[in-house]
Amino acid sequence: MGIKLNLENIKSQIPIDVQLVAVSKTKPIEAIREAYDEGQRIFGENKAQEMADKYDFLPKDIQWHFIGHLQTNKVKYIAPFVSLIHSVDSFKLLAFINKEAERNNRVIDCLLQFYIATEESKFGFDLEEAETMLDSSEYNSLKNIHLTGVMGMATYTDNFDLIKSEFKQLKTYFDILKQKYFKNDSQFKEISMGMSGDYLLAIDEGSTLIRVGSSIFGERTYKK
Ligand SMILES: *Cc1c(COP(=O)(O)O)cnc(C)c1O
View 1 (cartoon, rainbow, N blue to C red):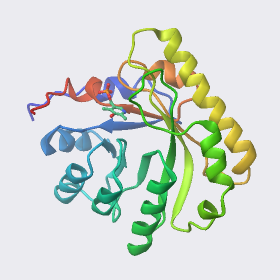
View 2: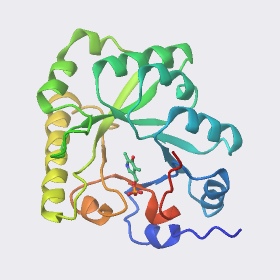
View 3: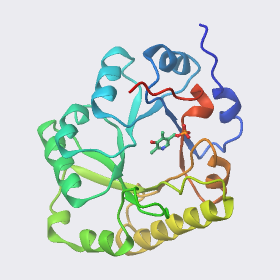
């Protein structure tokens, strides 16, 4: 169909217990359809409205993963169908997701995003903030969200030692939370880390969900 994807090549490199999120942000419906026809079912988007628009046009067995910073007033666009929100970075957001999930009679799976990078601009919890939330009665009263793991974004750098240490940090956070809060919850098992430049490293460090965009679909062009 004219669009050349690099999907098979990436799939051939990853173990079967690691899931591939094809990050289709900014890419047209046709590119997603092409990947779908090659068997891909999980797609990642970072804008709520864009995800909702694409959802309308595409097969309903696609699992839509939200991977970007999510504003509370945008949760309603994706709450009816989103299958995993990777980027929960505050209790306030989690409470909003819970409310919208309840309105839609669903339980929405979420990951806690941790701040692991050295850059100022990234979002996410630190360990203490996450533990404070998980200990709170407010969190424990939320019935329409289910935490299934953690997510992190490494520093944007070609220093692989730094990226590796950040992935290790996220794995440590996961292990601590698993032990302390989710020991008996077999569904708390996801570590979302690794992008086009570093997914093999992320898998070595324990990633269960890699988020790969440009290596599948080609470079993104932003019109702004
Ligand atoms: C865009 C994006 C990705 C994919 O980035 P690539 O470098 O194109 O693979 C992964 N995770 C998040 C949170 C993103 O916003």
